[in-house]
Length: 105
Image (cartoon, rainbow, N blue to C red):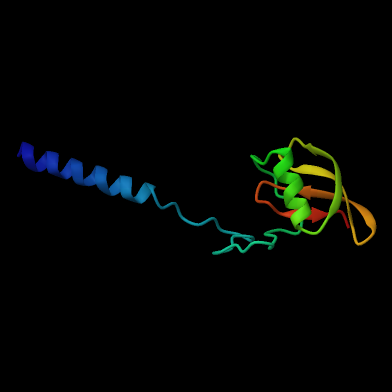
């Protein structure tokens, strides 16, 4: 009796640990199955914890085709915001925690 009870408990623990490792996908927009480089997941910055350093945020902006990146500061929503040039005109730019680079339109 004790052995079968212990075996059942171990089985339940193993099953719950396995299911905890594969959380379900988030529902809603911007949940691409595969993200490719150079593709924005959103047309505006997404709030969230941003682990990019200032240098990494600047590199993301430059990789998106902007030059002369200045005044980068992380706001209360975790979005890096600054100014940059593209195509000869200055604009406000941002980088969110997903790496999306957006400009003010």
